[in-house]
Length: 288
Image (spheres, rainbow, N blue to C red):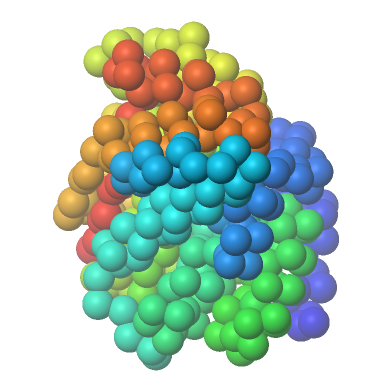
């Protein structure tokens, strides 16, 4: 372990009581909805899915029904990661990427497999960092893919060192202006930032009861849609594409609600999406 890595103690990575509470949540998290899905092909995600599910998974022998659903949900969450990677732009093997809030490492491993590039993941969960590094070691890609116990608000990586950065359902844990200030520092000129996130609908005013339930469940603070664009504009990030993925993610939640790995938050997501108080957006922006 390098001197820089050793210096990243809990006290200087977790800056506030809130960050400590978030780290505690994810250090203890062992939800089957994440672990069982990852066991399908040893690729572990911490995000939701996109696309219609195959209704045939609900048919056939009862004793294998749950496994069919698990495999289908994993297919949908991997499809979501592919959509994110599709928007990173022209990535070449010599480029360095950053996965901000990297979870158990699935998207970083996929990025390396697709582009042949180097990827660093950062997380404030020591447990997830250790798990993800073990995955990289087992796949023999640790020379290109490494995970670090660092804070995405202050990564310690060199200025202008990244061709692309992404956040996948992690921005609701941080101040967006501070986050995008760090990303603007890290990205080279013309570099790409891609965000997939849930955000509340400003048009409806204050957040709905369903959105508040999601906040409470994940110990997060969902931002309104407008906050993303204000924070990007203030930090030299110019959106080139905005995609509303809300309709595309609803089937995942409908299938998950039928599964034994449901966590109880499914109805809040479905209510929020269908009533229009919550959006699932992809935003791709260039550093100018």
